[in-house]
Image 1: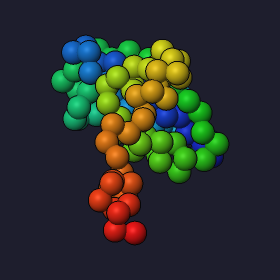
Image 2 (image 1 turned 180 degrees about the vertical axis):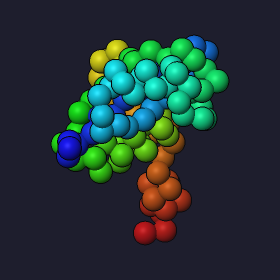
Image 3 (image 1 turned 120 degrees about the horizontal axis):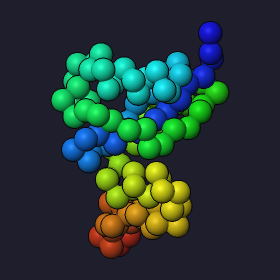
Length: 109
């Protein structure tokens, strides 16, 4: 059995993205989503199309990255899918100062 796993993103019929992981073959997993084998998010947004995948040697790494990507904005997911790493880096920049870097925190140090 495979030690690692794929992280994948599918685009649903409504244009939304679903992020998941699988130890099995990607084509089979996408077919399962399209068949409605899983209740939940993709079952009512079929058909789905695979738009991104990445292999990880350890399933724990795939799951960790799945959780991270699920919190990403749509724009960040689109930048990753298109391979626009410059845009992804720009979108990843914090829009507000971290609380420990606020002017008030600096003056009280």
